[in-house]
Amino acid sequence: MSETGVFKPAESVVTAPLAALGLVGGYLTARETGVRALGGVVLAAAGAYAGRTWAAKGGAATTVTLSVLYIGGFGASHPLAKRIGPWPAVLTVAGASALASWALVDRVK
Image 1 (cartoon, rainbow, N blue to C red):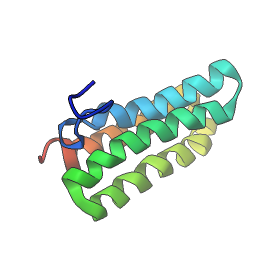
Image 2 (cartoon, helix red, strand yellow):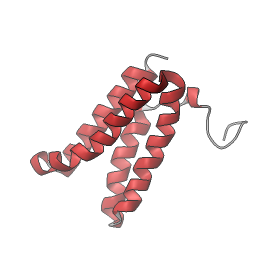
Image 3 (cartoon, rainbow, N blue to C red):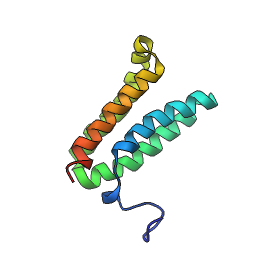
């Protein structure tokens, strides 16, 4: 816990692991519990927490870009899973989202 509340200041959060965790954790939660909505909660929570840092460090355009990639990766993982399998698909989109987060926000600032 930070001195100002429950969350670390947005500027001090590293977002690449959050982006990967949201996609992998959301899939794993839905798969293991059988409750897809619960997986969506994990996906949304990690995305929102990363998003506040994307906004603070990268601005609106970067936030929109990374959000589209994050949510688009979630959507793209479904048809991709039919081609390469569920885990490879989830890991691929999680890696792409994490790499983009690192390149556009974590590495730069």
